[in-house]
Length: 111
Length: 114
Image (cartoon, rainbow over all chains, first blue to last red):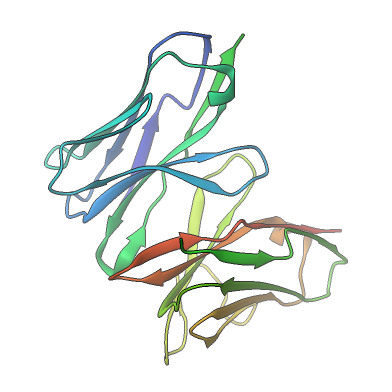
């Protein structure tokens, strides 16, 4: 059974800082890994999807890396802004298109 | 792009009543449909998976007689919470699609049972 751990559970930083969010998973037999953003009381916004054959994926100020063999992924957020405040979820996909979510990192970026 | 419409976005119901949540794929057909729930301050947990033409497969600990899932067509999935109780208050979200084309999440339903 896939288990996903995200560290830290919460993070509060001043605006402008570069951030690192960590995700680890126990079953390395994944097809891909996705990072999502969830605002309070809202649904999910897909940020980045890394295929199992890829090492990283970039979108704007976001960069996600994947080390499948060691069961780790990292989300880098550059030059953080107050609008980045949200919960960030990591979800590797295994057979049957099954997504397993971590408990998330709750990010607060202070102006 | 692939769009999933989930309704209602929020609902309050009395204990003992049933609530139906709908997810529709507006511009694609979904052979597989997933339902997740998220309790406050917790992660999303998979409740069940349904594939076209077969009954839903429920995760361990999810009562299939309480959470009725109907994969009514390739564009519609419903989740009915029967005899709801306050402990069923949660955020429910669907994910629809196919293995070839990928999947799309609905916008979620906040259920409060009073």
